[in-house]
Length: 246
Image 1 (cartoon, rainbow, N blue to C red):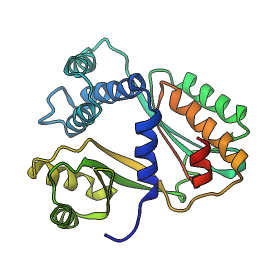
Image 2 (cartoon, helix red, strand yellow):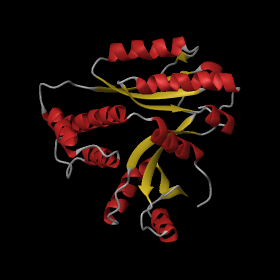
Image 3 (cartoon, rainbow, N blue to C red):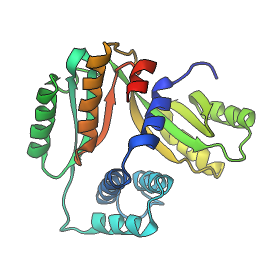
Image 4 (tube, helix red, strand yellow):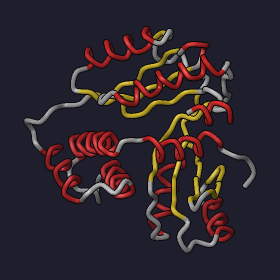
């Protein structure tokens, strides 16, 4: 398929290189807990839970951890999480979009504002970045024994907008409204993605000088280290020079 979703490739590579397993597990645990509280502990009747469990398996989370997260979500006396988003600009005008899941919204707001201020950015109002990002379904699928040409045709029929094959992984992109249909298609093909998520993809990128870009990436890393933040998106152009410096 035409096009090259460099953003998805960078996110996958960067995640594979520097993500801490405990942080990944913590975020997935929270997603499982929220999914159970929202629609119950049965993955057959709870699509969000089914997806969270699939992502947990893709991240090699032990089965015991998954069972404990489901049990935690079923506990009526357990913590109640709030899902919220934050939008703002980093140093140099780079757009930052955050997705958070927290049991203390005031703490999260205070931390987010502090991080922005520390690195020369500013927290904006919700909706201020809606024109910068598109929400897309992103599927990361190990190639294994899949034939690339045949698999591409299957994905096109299921509504894929773009597909890449790099370093033994397919990255398939769909419109947000086709996310569920793609999940059903993969289930019908008995293909389990390593990761499947709705992500916010920038329509255009922002290019700044190297030193400013490094500051932006330090802010991004600060957000990623916060336990309340589930996902961080930005529109910084990831130049070869910047990637080498990281």
